[in-house]
Length: 263
Length: 262
Figure 1 (tube, rainbow over the protein chains, first blue to last red):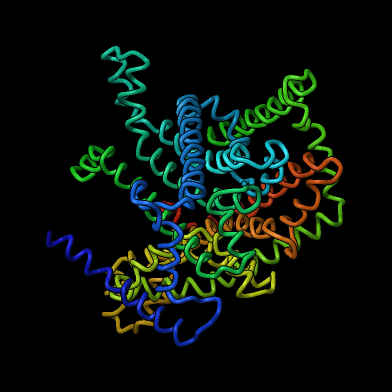
Figure 2 (figure 1 turned 135 degrees about the vertical axis):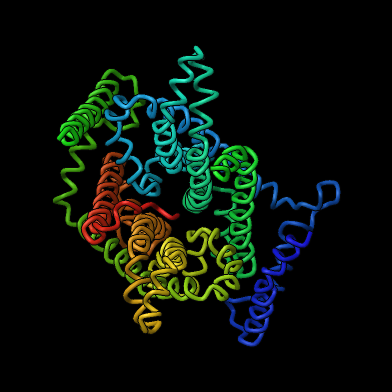
């Protein structure tokens, strides 16, 4: 309890900053900087003023937020699966890894937004194009980290597995994957924050719904509080997604952290 | 030297891998196994070669790289001192930490509309967006690196009568420098991605993003887009390579602990 309290106390700067922001924006009266209270009111009417039967969520949430999040998560899961499966296979075979290394390094170096026009032409406007863009952009960190994680599995552990006659599947599930897990998680976390960025850019350029689209719409109509509300929502989403992943990582990798503390 | 022999073998295998990829993709396209809207490898490579003599493409590269360089230099000029400050005074760092954690996850791309309204000028918009995105790796790497400087080394300097300024210049900065360079290297590739994204966003922006928007609807649009993306990848690799090589040259004494802190 006391630790939680101390942790909260460390956040004192946030209310101070918000109050200062409120005071400055009210004094300056600049058209582009609405006070945070106005933004908060806008956030409420935009997202939380719906009927009680739907947990007060508005149509805007179901039309723009859920589709965005759905595409983001679908692309992340698909990229994660591709990255881990290919990465572990490549990491276990040094020879195979040598053959594809330049291709992987080059694929990672291509700035993903440059391929947006390509995916737009191939899939036309819609979710498929956005998912393709996100997957292409975020698969690399998972792939590279999985390769590295699977490559440096402790040789002693693998030899022990041979002595105990573990099957290939058991060896993969009990030794290789757990030992590669910390690296894989680091890759997954990086891809999740990349996915958020690519979701926004793909929706800004080629979409008829979603958070990025709403943001562009707010710009066109010069709805400043609405624009700020969407920007803040993206920040909050980034924080929440990262926090969920860190929580999951702590839980799943608890044994790993214990082991590291013990040695 | 068995090292150089295995390096030679790896280069050899890598080259075979690339050639095999090209051959398989080209063969599959010719055999009709790939949808005909996907261009052939030979087409893409031809256009990649042609781009090198296309003045519009070269101008676009120059425009993007100018903005990239200005944005990155400004970021380094502001954020390295800021990181040194936060790394030195831990009370300030603790106080500002929640704000940093709050701003960091906001995707820089989301700030483009706001920047367009505020700054009007496309050059300034692009620089501002690049700076926002590339701030975090530089700031956070600098902050951590300065904080983790060996206290014994600092105390030794102090007991020899050196002042804070001398300690900063002779101990803190040199030992933090490799990590700061790593932060700058990460920011450099982020800055390139963000620059092109901003240019893709709308009319009025110059550079590679605008070039992509321009060529995509013209004749041979798709192969040119892929060829442009390939050159952008080459630029990314070169930039990264330059930073890695600079780090190795400058900090040879340090290579044993040159890990990445982000």
